Length: 307
Image (tube, rainbow, N blue to C red; front, side):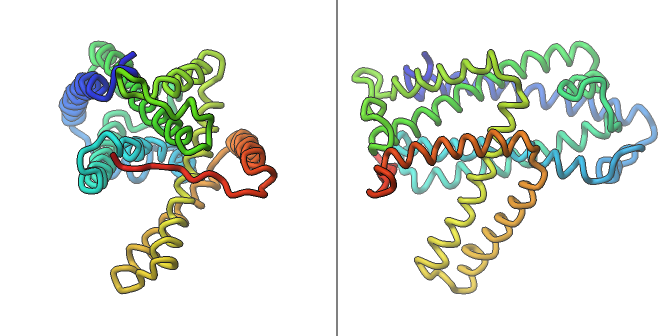
């Protein structure tokens, strides 16, 4: 309902969610530092060297393929082009600020978490954060974390639903999907049908386990990251021929490094990720074949016009 009402409603809801999470972060850092200094024996390099009995860097590499998904928030910003004033100016800034700020928060909290509880094994890996938070601030902080986590999940769902529905709307408007998905509601000026479709698909969370969902998302995310880096090289370095000193760095070296790092992350994906990912890709290829009448006609071009 919030998404159907429009972006202002989502913005207000997310403002409350982010405020609650920010308050939790401040409390966790304060209590975490307090518990660390109270031990009297601090190894500031422990988060880099690993806990005793750790398995070297292999768990870090495997975790990177999953945790890179934590950065998916920045690409959601780009889907709100049509609802942004002066998007060419503000959207790139918003994407960079979101990426850098999120990265600093993730790194900082991970570092402090390891100082608070420098271990490599947990009673339950899926709820390891609760053990860390309990070590930092006890049951009261765990209760606050649970509340902030639920609020964060709601905020994430709101934003994801809004961004995905707008992509579906653009695909409907461009002829990739049925035209009904490309229409806006007369009163709210929002893509109601794509929002309802996204909501229906999201209900699969009731029957699918987290491993299956994360495996599919991991595959899709790394496909997107790989193609984006290659697209930058092709469009700017080869097509636009931006090959000066600055162009070589921005349009060849940096995206090239990004592509290589993404390929490295591919090696850490599970077999389940490849199985679900290839099935999903196969379904998309079959749909494209139908859309282009056996690849005999050009595929519709996605229309992402700026309002």
